[in-house]
Length: 204
Image (cartoon, rainbow, N blue to C red; front, side, top):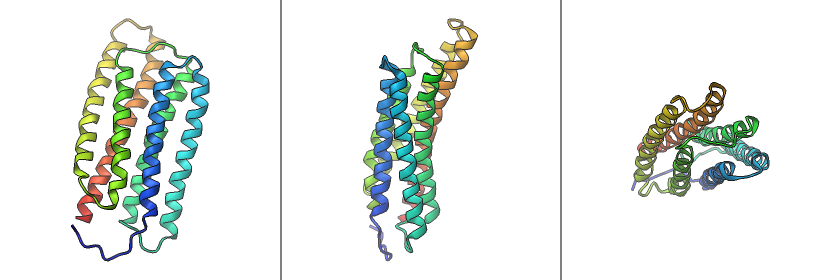
């Protein structure tokens, strides 16, 4: 184990863990959006979850700005907090589009796309507490990279379905906006994992 000579503020790890837990909540709301009779009500809860995630991000930034010695490089703390926040933003965007477009039918594969995001959220939530020790954290970014590749595959399949002639042009545009937001969320999860890998390399 590397020898760290600087003091450790464990509060940062708690905040990152809370951020990741909020992403797990967000993926749960994505599932509800696909299944709910009242999608507008789910949209209200998703916006509240996104605002809570924003506040947690601001708490991390404030802590960085008021802490003399941080547990790892400040730029990496900023980057990690921002990347986690981006995931929630893209998920909230997808839910908002479903509500605004009044969508009630979804192409094959979209639920699978959401399920992959749920898996990403779970492994990210499990990994954040391990930032403090970096124990067995390599398996986290390997798994997220695998999941992002799976998300890419599903995304391409959904696009093939949308452009296969079964949907009218306007419906294609609406649904593509939603699946694009979900794909962006998967990419953002991978960015989180890449930042964690970068931190682990620096701290080793």
